[in-house]
Image 1 (cartoon, rainbow, N blue to C red):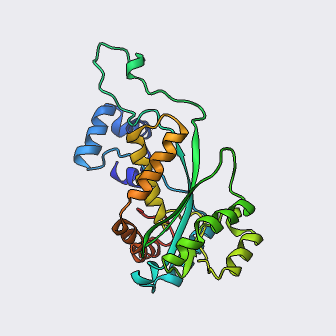
Image 2: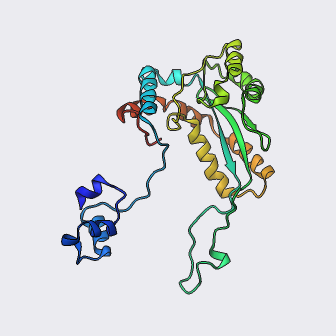
Image 3: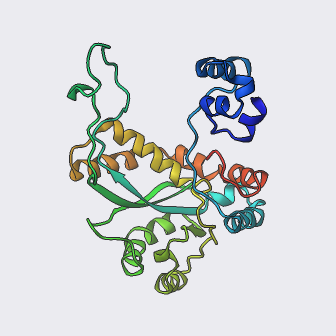
Length: 269
């Protein structure tokens, strides 16, 4: 059983029983589950969700990490890390409840209310390990980031912080708006070099950690409308300490080392 589970971590106890009728035909599924968990120390765990990477993506990630593996934490502190993220109105912070056994699980008090298309806001932000948080910008409703409006975001929310933070290079992902010719020209005209960032690499981008922390905090605050959501996000962004952003920026050598160790695959970050 151990060999089969290690070969296919998603296999269930019922499937093991079905696959081996001569060996497990008279053994209950519950007993198999117990043996897997206790005797073989292979309990059921929630799988981490990570982007699917093609071999080409892995090669690009490896190439990037090998190119920058000699960079020091001090060099990474001079990078302005930027990204967009979508924040949604959260109706309930938890999906688990404590319900008396004699009450239906469908009682309104014990159900989680969902909507098909919850209100949301897209946010652009940037930070450096030198001076901490940079600009924060909320995209208007129903507006997607394209080359033209991305230039406006960079002009209004990046140029000044980039100079104040004494940054030497910009980190942005490979989204189409970021790679457009007009954006490349704008950055060149303003003497802002850009890291050749590999696609599908949220584990390499430390600003993703900041977004995740903010999403956890928003889930606890439970804003009821977009204005409250924006106010809560702005407050969270302003209150983030410089030491936190410095820690994120200086984690880059470890992130890069782990990607190399995992041969381009996703890491824990």
